[in-house]
Image (cartoon, rainbow, N blue to C red; front, top):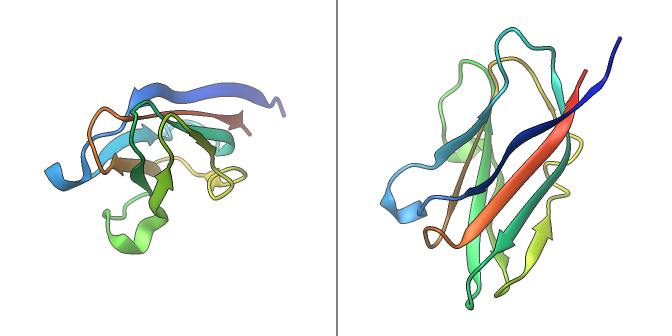
Length: 116
């Protein structure tokens, strides 16, 4: 078996939480093997603190608060956060990751992992 490092998404800016549902930031392709998340980092580019939330929806599921992995996590102004909640998570084909921020265009995210 070959294990391949991959950039899963980003960098990308998270959408506004109050402006509607979270935005889809990653889908494991249906023909892929499972993905092991190795590192996810969030960066607040603004001069004020803001919050963000992340959800993992398993293949065939619908986005709901029951899928929250990180809920309203605060990042200080110009600070970064590396997620212990997501790192080490296995995603199967069709699984998705959704995210939002308290203020649009203030929190960036990048995720990497391994195809297993």
